[in-house]
Length: 239
Image 1 (cartoon, rainbow, N blue to C red):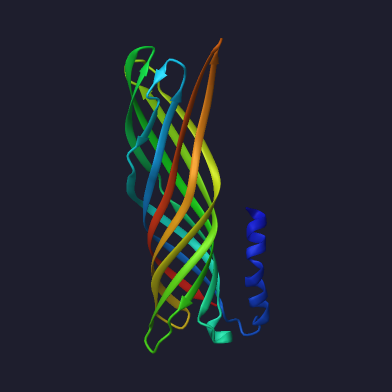
Image 2 (image 1 turned 120 degrees about the vertical axis):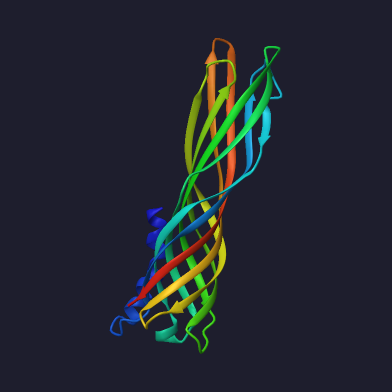
């Protein structure tokens, strides 16, 4: 991840160096709002010789959570008259949970299992923007970006009537991509209010556990995909 951002920050440094004397182009943004996180494609699988119907696809879950982040970028419009921006962005999101049930046959008896997945995602993105400059203080824009998503999954399984409550956790760094729209409002020459919407796809995370007891082998696998619809309001300061 460090190498990724070391490479991505080079264009910003070069652009800043080219116009450092004018002190134009660099900006920072702080933002907060609602992230509507979608947890989907949720699978839960028990594997053992005596288990029947061990695979289940659980219901998708969409939940609004708090989101926020910071960004540093370079605006090419003032120094170069190009209506584009390049930005490094970090966005944090609250935890989303998805609950479901799974019915299996174990050793000839029906067993109901309550399953709960908790997902948290943080993204580190390189975003490009195209600004539609006009004669007003409002500047609409479109954006697209790629980067890394750190996705954490906690999976809790409770077989009803067995007194078992087990939680497994795993995290994964995935390729992430996104696109969005928004608008800036210039309060002063240096301060802008930014309202934005972005869709971010964070990829897939999975958990596996194997249990051995003599000649018996029991395996449990769970996986899910995560995406977010981010509705943010931010304040930008341009240097």
